[in-house]
Length: 379
Image 1 (tube, rainbow, N blue to C red):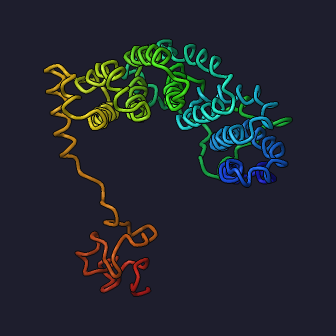
Image 2 (cartoon, rainbow, N blue to C red):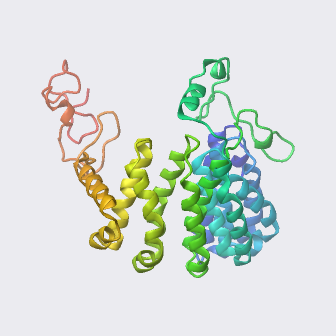
Image 3 (cartoon, helix red, strand yellow):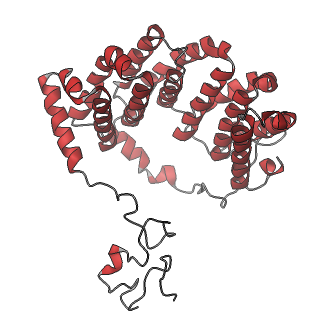
């Protein structure tokens, strides 16, 4: 708890993560949960203080930890629920994508702890989901010009996500917090829609709550919002959608997804794959999404749902994906600049990059092997 108030924001982040581990490993354990119960309020207050931190990784960890605590100790946390809801909703539209995702995870935990929040969260989702349509129009050329405008980026303070220059200030009562932070840019409307995609993923996991009558209109509206292309970040939004769709599909199950949702999502996937203006990131995400969905519902069934043009695109994309270089297989590679991988290489093995040098890390050092490999000669 003391380290949640440390001067170094990296230490505060680690402290929040440690508190989250307590809630996850002890608070969710049927035998040991009562032993942590007397300390819940103290730990929760420490997390709430970090929830106002100026450092986004600290807020991120505090956000997740609060959700876990609510799930483990719903009655003990109920008094702080109004404040927690406010902070979770604010984080759902944060400028950092991982903060948005973790806020959605925390809201999912809150729904499991407090089912009465369901109507409120659905109302919030319908309100925030169309936000991307309100994004100010901007061409890619204008966006690049802004990004490369030397006047916009000169004589500005440099900030690091590490623990050095400058130290990020702590938030909380009586101190400067994120609400008065002078280094964050304004939130963009499309980021609210992006956060809603993660929230939908969490709602889908609540199988006893999400019926097709509720979910189908949400997915249809999501597809409609993600079609808009009047701003350059729309590619990022679609990439998020395509990364999360297979997760949702697997949660819904093969039969349900194939019967109700597959036809709803196909058009946007293949419009992205055939587009000449989409970014490589969104096209790659769309291709991977199509591949994973075809594996879920069955290749023959997936291709049978496509028209001739879409089938041609799908076959071409799958051929391209098969030709992509694969990553190193398990236990197949390691970096000479990193720690050794236990069991990943055979004793005395030499990295391929240095094999041509006679087994030395530097051509001028004959016979030397990687110092992290068992049996290597020390320098």
